[in-house]
Image (cartoon, rainbow, N blue to C red; front, side):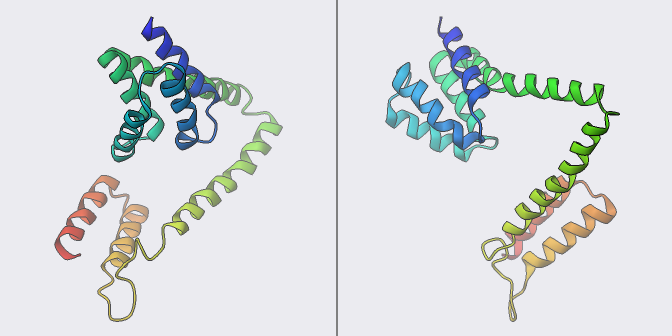
Length: 179
């Protein structure tokens, strides 16, 4: 019975939880703490802190943690898959529609309008990261290692197609050695 409840709760959250992982947290809290009483508010807060510290989207980490605490590894699998299923299903439908209608001029107009917006969103996110916290050693009289890492990473990735994992590992090593 608990598996059906986990499936129902997290499928519903995945289907109705617009706005990303943090927007889903109030829905998750309502279901987990208030409705099904699977956790206390203190346990939920602790679980949320752990979910934010671990890699991956906070909503998926939260679903996995809740599922595990309620029904062990099978519960974690049910909760995580249930949360992701609506997105997978909707993306499947959208992709099927786009491939079926890729030659339709209206679909082409829509896609040609979306491409620059997506580029703008990515550029805006990149510009928001160009701040004093990420470039803490920038300025006259500073060693500017963060700027050097940024420029070298950009050139290596863009022009030489270096694997990003090597860039991440190399920049982490440089940060440990020189920062």
